[in-house]
Image (cartoon, rainbow, N blue to C red):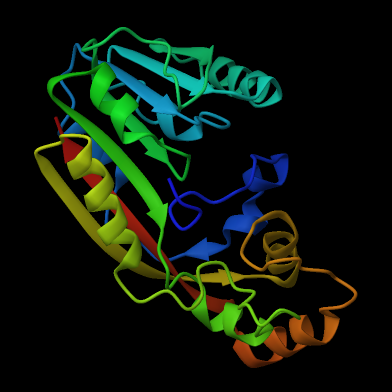
Length: 250
């Protein structure tokens, strides 16, 4: 995989905060619904890079067996606390790497990668015939109105994550990767929705995610203040998120 396809960052507790997610419009798709309508009731779902397990907790009432997989022990402890608090009945957690999924060939009905690194060949290997891989990726136009204020670094490279990529680049890569892995049906759906941040949420977003290369609160203070001034609305600091939903069938 290329860096264009996989962001180079690790999960942090700050990702769970309400502020970092902002206030969002209704998304063009409901991930829970997209999963449920393709998932057999008595099947097995594996969510790779499950993080705090909040997304799979929503699926607990619909699927008989859900496995949350993550490589980070601390993340799994947090996820375990969350599933206990939610009193789930169908979720188990495992430690594992997306490059070597700890499941036998052809035993899983669905595998999901929600803003987590994926390997199409491993996904294909563990899926049953007719099984699905569902992936969500950050698109190249994500938060573009914020990224443009940061311009280029000292080497002349754009500081905004994926800035400068032609529209449709990530979708093309996704289709190519999953086609090469022998998936027969591949959909790439681009979605855009507005999101509003308060100043603390925007600050956390810039500090804790790869949105802006080498972001620094001191060196970038003037840029930050300009963004707050220019993009503030009655609802907060406004931007547009761009996500790509990939649905691939074995």
